[in-house]
Image (cartoon, rainbow, N blue to C red; front, side, top):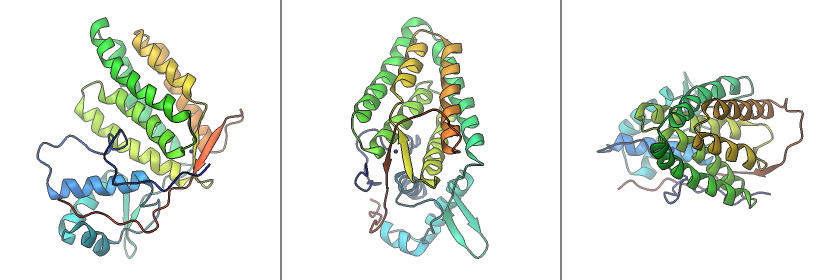
Length: 259
């Protein structure tokens, strides 16, 4: 998704952290650790299938292993980490046989979001779509370059932003988890981290259809886009498409102390 510089999981500026930080009024240490772990997984510095070294990470974060384990169990429940007897904690992998389920879940949530937004009265819809248009502009800017990480982030930010715009916090929380799982699926691909660059037309159509109140059209566009994505990840997409490849690398990465 040309090879960019290694991703920076501690980055908090811009849109990259939007899907990772759930709404927390008074974040606890466990909450903050969970954000750091999600960010490292999303950024590819904790790679799919890699071991989560509890003692080392706890020392880097400046926390005890108790809250780290509690945070890790939260991510196990989210499907981002897995634990096996004798093998400890590892980052999940999402292979070819699982991407269909992942994108069906995304279609259920994002399909509801576009129907909800399309059904608003014209003034409310215009206000919501303005935010999504900003995300579309960020995607257009990213696709103009060759940074796979930036393109991938902008793509997922737009899809997450559609759900976030509904104001439904439960749906937004589910979307947050699915966004990170989507990144895991991309990083789990045997060809490396590959993103499509010929994606502007479909996203422009999606945003335009929502803006026009065309719920059925938006859902069809979303469904077809996801169908093609699943086919590509499974190696079944016959039609030609253009991509850029990145190699997120966590070598030498350390967590910053909390606080």
